[in-house]
Amino acid sequence: MVSSGDVSRVFLQSIISRRVVSDKIARILWRKCVEAVKAADDSVDVPDDMDQFDNYINTINRHLEPLDFKLNCTADEATGKKIWAMINLKSDELAQIATDFTPVEIAFFKALVDQIILASSQSYSISAMTALRQVNGLKPPMTKTQAESVLANLVAKGWLLKSERGRFSLSSRSLLELQPYLKSTYEDDIHECTVCYELVTKGVGCYTPQCGARLHGYCYQQLHRENVVCPSCQADWSRKAKLAIIGEGALMEGEDSRSTRRKDDDDDDDDDDDSTEVSEEEPTPKLNLEEMEEESESPAPKSQGRRRR
Image (cartoon, rainbow, N blue to C red; front, top):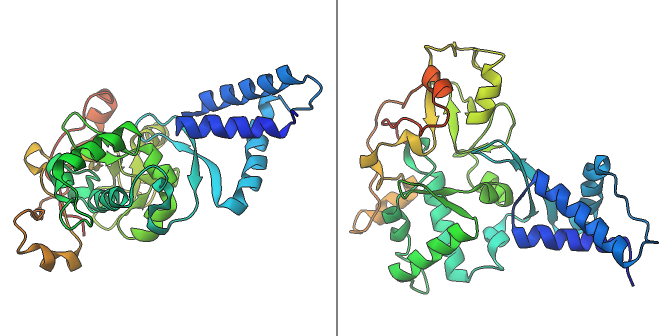
């Protein structure tokens, strides 16, 4: 028998099957679910006012809360557009992807996340060579051929992004669904945007050494229309000012195989021929604001950066 609750069930199934959807698509799916239920039984009382969409989501989340799930939204780091996904609120052992991958594949993904977050120069990205090195020490063993297949699967399922340079970084889906895990595990290594308070792995940072301001590219563009100073330290952010690059653009091509490991891992890697190299100390990369405004669609400039600590 059809009931109003069927709208929620069909809507959730639609979101889960698509993994991540834009706000526009989420609203279309909701309307289609309402229409489907009413087509089955037009006597069912189902709210269909799009102005009540946010209240509808809040109602669903109240039912999901005891199950440690939540329909959550954030802005895509590349476009700034609002996106939705159902996230697992448990942060232990990357439980969020446990249903899609085997235990050894999850361990491999966990190692990739570790390398990406701890990558040098706040690049939050790693080369394919560094990614494949993470098979060392996995139990049961994983061949590099198998690792390449898993990497392709992680990209296909939207957990990782692969750039034109062949570097891997966390996708918006990962940042959204793994947010509890990332914040609890990498409290000192990952930053929130000073404007929107979401995690930022692509954008700009203040050039003042002691300032911790980090902004998404789209948050900076919006802020710069109204203000030309740092929102944290009030440093000059005029056209002549230069900001540190956050993301892949912080690294030059020659650094594609380098990343930073945690200090307690260094001794274990000294005798490993396949160990990851640690980048040398370099000046903080800078980004000219005028270039950013005039060439917002072009790739970020590539310059050397200092090592993440």
